[in-house]
Image: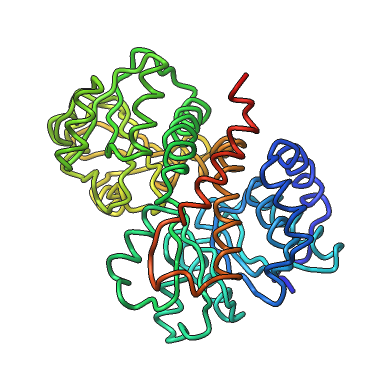
Length: 403
């Protein structure tokens, strides 16, 4: 069922990590018990393209408990091999093997091949991240076989409403449209994990350092606030006037990339859009400036243009690359421009509690598709309000918020 023999050592390492995380995700634990009784996914094959890390493993266990057959792949650069091996071994032992493709060191071409292999399995539901599966189904003309699915990210939601608008005749619930996810996961969890990952990967201090955050959506807002909370000096690049106004009232310096390039020490992109940090701006930065991206796609920093202009480059340590510029200065690129809080060294990603919330949104939204797809409209749409409110109540109870 898989493209690799199961590695017992890797599977054991993954099992130890997943055990801890499973024990701290009470919302999914309760859902897993309920789904094991109701089995809403029985007879359905869910095609997945999502970061494969320990928290994702708990989500997949929950869907499998509800009867789902899983065939999937990770996202480029963020697959954790020990977790893949654990899922392969544990699902085979349970008699419901998962078909999982991909490794951490896959090239982008290999990742695209993995997406194709997922679609070759002819899933009837999609658990998508970035719109890759939905786009593949449309390109193949195979939309009639899809009941519906979910999309995790802003980037994927933009894709569904942009180039794929009108081409997706089945419902796709955009998890990132949920205000619950925006607050709990994007602002607070992404903000925390990005700052934590910056410190872990670079071993640099935050206090007193000058940071430029590109984008003041929920993720960028969280990154900016968490950096400032630890003593960082923070400026924001935002082209939307209303968001720029909010950033200014929140006390951040707000200007253009070219204006802030000579000022900043660290530049973090969080927009979902391509080429927001250009070579023109990079050439204005001081020697040793750090470039990092936390958006889903590795396109927010113009890495191709940067490499074309460079006079040389070398990896200093894992996920930390020095790139020399023609002007005699150099910049430091984290994780090759990929989502560095998941593709960087010792990836942790978002907090357990936030992903417990976010993955319950995924689970209940997929359950709605499986049991009541006719109540949903074709194409991209927000999480149904009753699901949002149900999960908010459950999260408040889990947090003991009244105490």
